[in-house]
Length: 448
Image 1 (cartoon, helix red, strand yellow):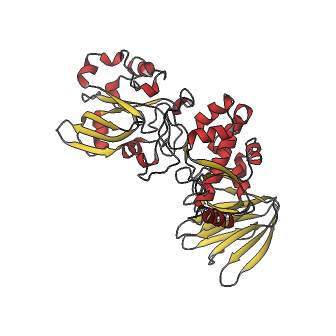
Image 2: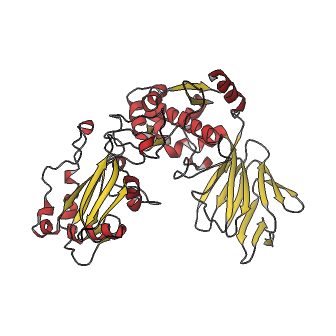
Image 3: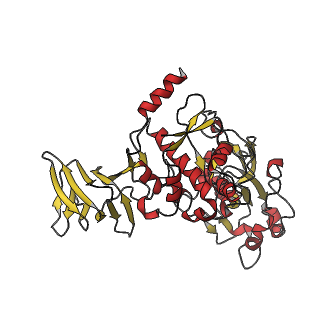
């Protein structure tokens, strides 16, 4: 049976020349006007409607797609805008050198390889970049990690490449396309981010991770930083997966700046309002073995209680669409400290003593975040009773309700490979195979 499944996989696997369809929603979601300029190579513009038309579209050509108020409109080069009543436009690259640039009125400009499909979706343009798989990875690996890591962490980039390639092979077995968004799939920015990470892609060409028993591609999940402890899939998405376990990751500790250690302050009244409660009086945390929060139970000043999942709690304060910083709420591996209104009135917020929220044995040696609040609670910064939250800023008058301080580690779900941990392992001399074997269980390497 295993041999049969293996042969099915060999016959069904995508070849290296397969085109990957990527829906461009990260930077161009709901785009009402876009300009597409051919920068390199030769293209054909295929307009599909009642009678298909094909136009030569060499380098330098420009297509503008907009909304005319009651119908979509198009303009080719310097010609006038025309009402468009078609169903789909394809910019098909005629050779491997094809590169085009997508522009928006707000100054967004990104270059991509391959071809492009455009469809009008009621009030916006839907964009799908079609590009060969290894070329796709050139736009994934540098943004998921960094081209700068090639200097002392090339093995991490190789590990990222194998994981990213495995992810897309697995995804396209059950889906017709993927997105370019890190919120849904893998981050992808096309030719715009290509650089030295290409060395890792060439060195691992065609290599993916498969299950040791079935020889089928695994679901190669990864996150930016696991906070020092990996997580099981069932503790995040409720579906167990034998390729992931929960264990200590010393390689991630002390790496990644804000991703490694962060804190978020929020007023008790602001916290309560976020969950339709009065000012919060008490918080209890139910945790997994890893230290990640499973449930958050809040009790307000009127005695009303509410329980939410750790994931839902994080999403209420996560900085969607904003750069991360040490004052962001980045994950579910956290502790909480309350400073009451009475304590603030006595000036006790000026000193937090030697309290260390990360006292679990698996996190010993972590840097203590005790003094992070020093500049927040003392002049010239605001006192804690003036703070709405780390993201909302300060209020005009002090609040008597107290504040809660959330001290956290890590960024993301923590399942599978920790990118910062992989980088540290590479710096210490581990190979990409050793990195992947540390973060994934029951795997084998398969080269197409």
